[in-house]
Length: 137
Image: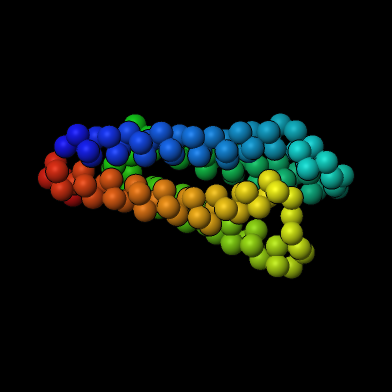
C-alpha cells in the first residue's frame, strides 16, 4: 500500500509540473498573442493564435483538474492525452512541410509525442494498482 500511495503522489507532482507548460504558454498566448514568437502576422492569424492558446490553457487546466483523484480520472486523462498527441502530430507534419522550428517548438513536440503518452501510461498503471488494492473498478 505505501508503494501505491508514493507512486500516486509522484505522478500527481509530475503532472502538476508538466501541465504548467500549457497553462503558462497558453495564458501568455491569450494575453500577448504572437509576441512570444516575434513574428508579425495578420489580425486574423493573431486571433487564431489566441484561440489556439486558449485551447492550450484549457488543456493544462483540465490536466490539473485530474490531480486530486488522479487514480480515478483515466478517461479524462486519456482524452486530454489524445488531444495533445493529435496536436503534436500536427506540429510534426508542419516540421516535415516547412522545416525545423525553434528549439521551444521542438521541446513542445517532445512533450506532446513522448512525455504526455508516458504520463498517460503511468496514470493507467496507478489507476490499475489503486483498483486492485482497494477493490474498485
